[in-house]
Image 1 (cartoon, rainbow, N blue to C red):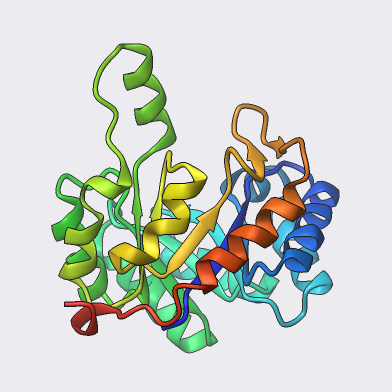
Image 2 (image 1 turned 135 degrees about the vertical axis):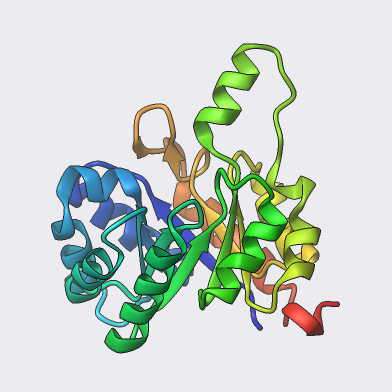
Length: 237
């Protein structure tokens, strides 16, 4: 598949999210993510306002569902989300209910392996439960605290190839990647490239980053698309 660039709108107000989204789409970003901070701060209004402003752009609602799978997926879908995120740490039944809601309501499901004891096996579990995409995620808090304590900090790239080779659905790598590393994830067979902190978002303040973000995003989109088609699943192997 052709690589896709997604911006993570981990912001806390709708006006700032809309302005950043407009800038990102001008730069060529393909998908908009209503980040967890935005949904916590603004609820479904954040997703609804993004959908109203961008009627045809795919929107990811990153609520990180752990329970109430059908209801949360339904709420996000009715607000305009194209994709919802469910946590692999949730009960298998929750993941299956989110998947069922996605099928019934015409949306897609992204399953996240954050915190799963075995991220590779966890990716397989998410695919087996019916998720359309797998998010391979190393948590912000884990990285922050380990760095503070002088302990080794894992990277999504450490096991990315193993995750990609374990499933037949597109994979996304998130968590502490530099811009160059994020751009390079298609080389690992992961075609869904996420741009958030530190380029587009200030992770310490949940604000749009300073500097000429639009120009940087445009360059990133050009570099990512230069990879051409990215083999997925069995094609990759």
